[in-house]
Length: 454
Image (tube, rainbow, N blue to C red; front, top):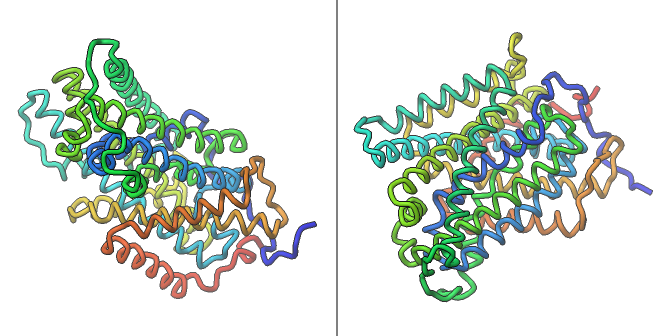
């Protein structure tokens, strides 16, 4: 028998205004495309320098923690398959104040991350041109700026166009990675005559494995973006859990194999001296200049796909807030021709352009990670609250296994990882959350979910 609940009902808004045009492949591409960038193209050298070959375990631990959040998120997404993702789940279970914090934090976090990805895209394009001998001087900020405008414009012309673009980008990226990791994997086990660099698996002990897991967990901040476009995904009961869990497993496997190939080809000590571009040197060691160019091309696609998916998700966050009257109604307007929330998309693309012009986006990328971790922790708490009170209307087609242990561990791991971040990022992140609380009391204090449902 269910207990008496302070939650009167769960608003599921079946039959929302946005069209369901995204299939399983496109949803999987959004999750994979958002996550596959940093873990493969930025972290291998840094992680190998911290934990040696055992950095493979660090990425595996990160994948396990991500799954602890992906499973509760899948249940909530099938119960409430609407745009907004984490904001929607938290606001319907923990109240408007927490919803406001998560919604505004999610929107700004994705804007910060998108600006970071687009600057990375500019760097990768410049390096690729240099590697291939093309003598064209292109300012990184200019490339990032033009790409931000282009991606926002594509999203306005149709969510299906964004999904198709994401499919193409992620598909090409996976082909490059399959060639790199497939050939590299066979090479390092001796099929083509290469000898592995000899070294112990735990050169620095076991503790760095866990601290490195905290460092690389930002590589997994992306699967929840699938839930932010849940209102546009076909057959959500089937496609939402498959795409979220599948993207974490796929990306986690790619990360582990990348560290295995990288440390086997160059050794963890040499990898650590190469920093954020270490994987490019691995590609050069395996395939010469062609390998380096291919990896740079992969980095180019990875940052582009991450930015594309993040712009789409950021717009759906502010759209969902507007639909609930927590921000001005203008953000929920739909373009009459394309049926897309063009004002919300401009509220994502516009600040991204401003941040690119400002230039200092690296710190904001870690702030984005903090805001995501807060959201992940609250999503797990939201599931525990809904399972406890069992409100009317809460009928998920997917049930998180191991409840309450799995969501409980997911919440503890998400909040706990914040303690490993640098103090500046923690201060800025909680400053953003404090600003969201201020906005709630200034603008949205009178809004309640029961009033929305009425």
